[in-house]
Length: 276
Length: 295
Image 1 (cartoon, each protein chain N blue to C red):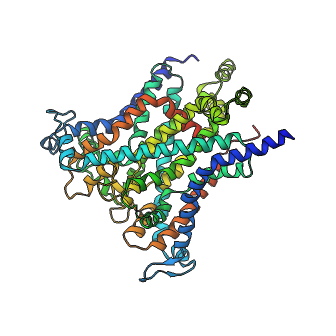
Image 2 (cartoon, chains in turn orange, yellow):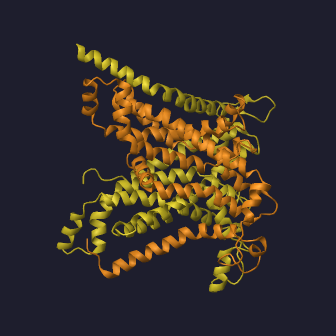
Image 3 (tube, rainbow over the protein chains, first blue to last red):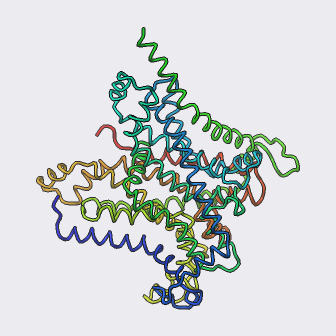
């Protein structure tokens, strides 16, 4: 499509303005994390760090249990993603391939659970986890995050298994492949982009999780980086430069993921919403 | 005969495959939902919780003026966040759609806002909006737009709007990505035909882009609205409902009832009401922007 010159300029202008608006807060947090406290508390903010320093990063890792928070975030996110992959792909394959009583109803009940506000289940989860004596553990966090993202995971991957041609599986079975072989050698590799998209979104959403972690994990045993960074504002005196360092640490994995897996994220977000 | 035998066997196998997930979700959905319904009929003011039937619900709906005020705040939050996010996302998606160079790079940068944990995003904005050392005040003072520092997060009116705009910042990429996918599914030939017929840009948008984009608009707005309605991270880190009760919403009210006032039955009843409100939001939006089947 040919664009007129003026409309092209307008488009570029919109994009530049949006990029400035969206990236400025990230830039601002980043340079704040590199400033010394003297530079942060002067009356005229400096727009780039005059004497960049890594002190804030060092001090949050030595002065606060940031190493534990980082490990917790990593373990909780990987645990949740792994659980979703194991339970989710098998269930999605079952939904997509086999007709059984209640298939459609169960499929749509997956969507209902997405309309349910997670916060409305915070009280029963809180009590359940107390009852199971796993309060303040990473396991408790993995369980609630799996609850939140497994329905989404199954929903997305069903769509991708649906695109694998049945004839392909049947001819493999005629050639003597067992059901397991058909699943692992044929269906799974072909649906892999979908599994990847769903896994990456599950990973990022678990990484971003805040309120369940806040309620279920008061100590460094299972506290994640989001809640860890928000601790700075609970203090009487907010150390903005340290908070900046904490914020950047909590965001870096997300940034890297977006750079490498942008295509899958877009696929997952659109598949999940266009069909959902 | 053999054929039908195979079908029965297959369906059994299929059911076995989804069984583990089904059991897990039953445990994680049916049990908590049942439990929250049960809790909502109890009163926790006494030492031993006692059964009060539907009194928590009637109390909330007919006697608690805060419920209605905070519901209003929640609606304000959802409305302003979605409106601005949608307008910006639509403009960005339309601009990005026909630019082939750098599309991937631009999308990556746009998606960064979505990837930042919402708590971290609100911490970033809390620092930008800070009254004494914040950069927003500094910029506005230098530009001569304001003449003294403004405490953006302590305004009795207006802080609610600011919270909703921080929320908008985090969800623009989500809406934009869905709209972009919708735009890219529109055949370019339609525009070419329209150009030959002498349609201008605005007419093309009204007659081609908007009708064909309706499904994407509906899904993105619907999902973003229910996500915004349930969202607590931003208000929790930016104002905790303050100043006074100016930014208190249903989510924070639920949290306070459950964990500060220990009125667990009351909080449970509020949860159930919030589920119904979410469903109502979905129904209203579907009615408002449902794509016309007949066209």
